[in-house]
Length: 316
Image (tube, rainbow, N blue to C red; front, side, top):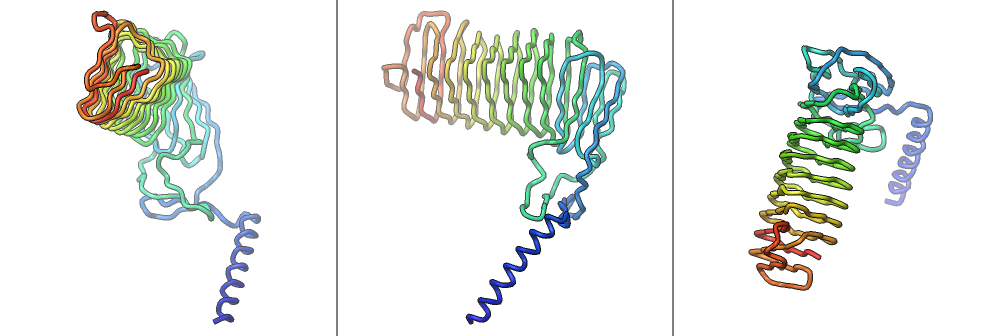
């Protein structure tokens, strides 16, 4: 028995040494399973720059390639990432089309040490779309697994429909009614302003808002949590199913409503002229009050109303 144990230890040590030497010598290559078929991952990187004709719409069909939209001089598209994942870029009518060759997204990547899912990874492959500063509207749809980032934009209207991936908006102002829809991904708003009847709908994703202003914006979240810091709201509402709300520094003008079906609410630093909070199955605390239905400054025209049917509620 002892001889077998010693032999096993020796074989293990030899295997580890050979693995280390193989890695140092470049002998271990990443293997990617696409449609459960193994193939060697080519780590060759490429940088492509392409000037395109003007467009108003963007249609994305890529997997594991992030898309970023910024304002600059003229219309052009840059790709940086793995050569094998580089998409084809074209303009059809007024639509910019970013499309990869069709392939299955099922599988994983083995790099000799670890096994990693090929979905929802940190994208190192990125298409950067530059539009002119005088372009005042953008419409974007995705039909693959791609994160989307919009930064440093000033627009009149915006339409975003993301199938599978996170959506990041940074330092962006939208003057008029817009639509944002995510089917499977998180939404991040940082230094963003939406106005005039904008509608947002999120399915199976969280919402994060930082230093953001929402003027008469309607939000629906189906199975996802909300976090915020320094949020200003003027009219509008948030409706959530299986959704917790956790935030700090909420400034309300023209009223606002949170309506939750199954979710906890915790807000610190809330500022409004009046408050109304209701719980049907959970604890309810409004500053120094406790009870199932609470009000403060109920005659004000600027009331923060919060209702949850199954969860605890704490406003302070």
